[in-house]
Length: 109
Image 1 (tube, one colour):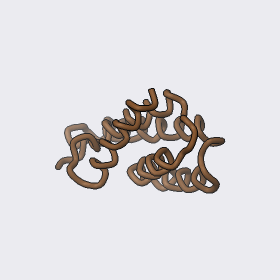
Image 2 (cartoon, one colour):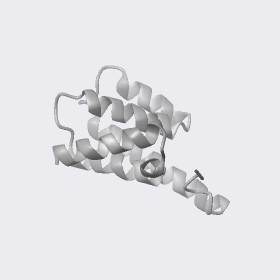
Image 3 (cartoon, one colour):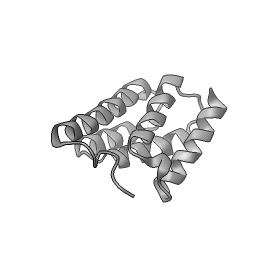
Image 4 (cartoon, helix red, strand yellow):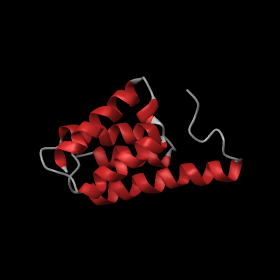
């Protein structure tokens, strides 16, 4: 499976991944008070080190464990960034998580 940004030139690729990072940081801002202790710091570290997939998977794990309903806008960001990173097309752990998130999103909206 190819990287979703493979067909982009260098400048477009940088912009593409920066957009994903910015969207994930926005999701973090929206849910800082909802996330479990230490999760916001862990996700922030992943983002600081350009580990966007790990940050996304950490968001998923937190969503799965949350007792409360996160804002719809947060769920939309996580779903959109998953699509941007191609998780909806992967037949691996990320793809499985994306499908579970999609089902979770549909139940909570």
